[in-house]
Amino acid sequence: MKIVAVTACPTGIAHTYMAADALIKAAPKYKVQIKVETQGAMGIENLLSPQDIAQADRVLIVSDIDIDQAARFEGCNAIRVSIEDVLVNVDKVFLLHCR
Image (cartoon, rainbow, N blue to C red):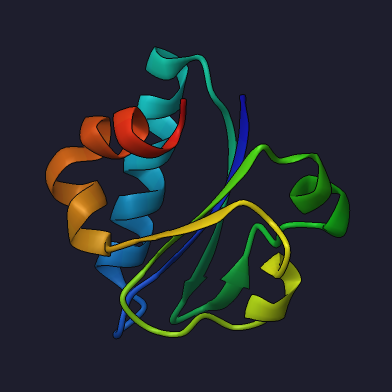
């Protein structure tokens, strides 16, 4: 399975990047290929291309705030997950949403 994700938190500092790291580290355990875009204090990093999005089986929006350029994901199999859910139990996120 291929997944793309966007992580963003209100301050755009620690939690944005901690959630991205958690997703990247857990993905191999679930045989998931993942690319994560962060929208933090430094702006958008690791920008998902239209091709990345089109090839994804699922889009995870890991954020409790509105994300920049959300229209890119219209019509996709997108799921919104809170930052806390990923930080507290990333395995549960994969089991519920990435199968």
